[in-house]
Amino acid sequence: MAAKVYFSREIKPEKVVELYRLAGKELQGRVAIKVHSGEEGNQNFLRPEFWKPMIEHVKGTVVECNTAYEGSRNTTERHLETLEKHGWSKCFDVALLDAEGPDLELPIPDGKKIKKNFVGKDIVNYDSMLVLSHFKGHPMGGYGGAIKQLSIGVASSMGKAYIHGVGDTNDFWNSDHDSFLESMADAASSVIEYFKGNLVYVNVMMNMSVDCDCCAVAEDPCMKDIGILVSLDPVAIDQACLDLVYASDDPGRDHLIERIESRNGVHTIEAACELGYGTKEYELVEC
Image (cartoon, rainbow, N blue to C red; front, top):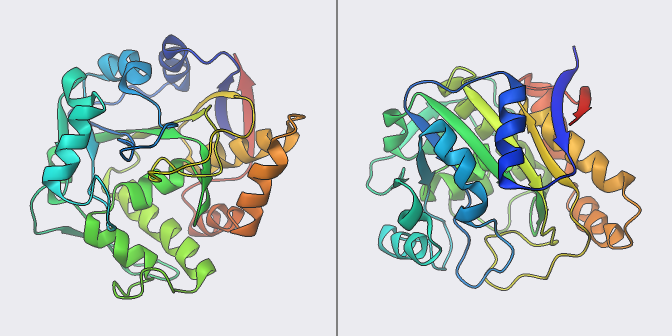
């Protein structure tokens, strides 16, 4: 059965809320709102002002997790400083899920490459999750969207190293690449299972650089903005974004496609499909 993906070419904060309502799932209880806080120096990440109407609508807590590499977000102290500098904690209630250890271990019995995932223990404070993703390229994953936010994004600092190393935290940069992509898909499945499907996904296709918001030095966007997408299916929403990039007549699309294809980015979607928590078949409902 095809998943519904709601799409608007109009990129405005209020449009995010409109599409969220159309998706038909009002998140209940204590809502974790997963954002990308943006590495210090990055010019492309989506600012808290853009997300404000959506965050206020669900009345949740903005959550993030520490990184596994040097930068402005690799320790709780530095990450909290960055959240303050970038305006997140000025606008919203903010929490780092892995501010303090020990991590929570989530099982992945059907994982293709990893059988467990490590997330911040404070995830237990929440009943549902709103996944706010900035769709763009990525130096390792090829692209970043909903599946990456669920996996690398929700993983603790140690969990990120575990995914990158395909179970070996000492092999962060040198693991087999397709196995890393499959590990991301595995990790995402554990977060979906944890929340029992109580998740909604938003992908915003603007400021589309070939680089991630985790890059302190990132290329400027290479193609024009495309729009906002909302779905209850993380696989469908990422596939729809890829299809919109390929369908674009913008001359900069080739640069982004080269980044996606050179890292075999679509393999993450393929692996997620095999795990059964989403479908590549979707109906794009333009609003």
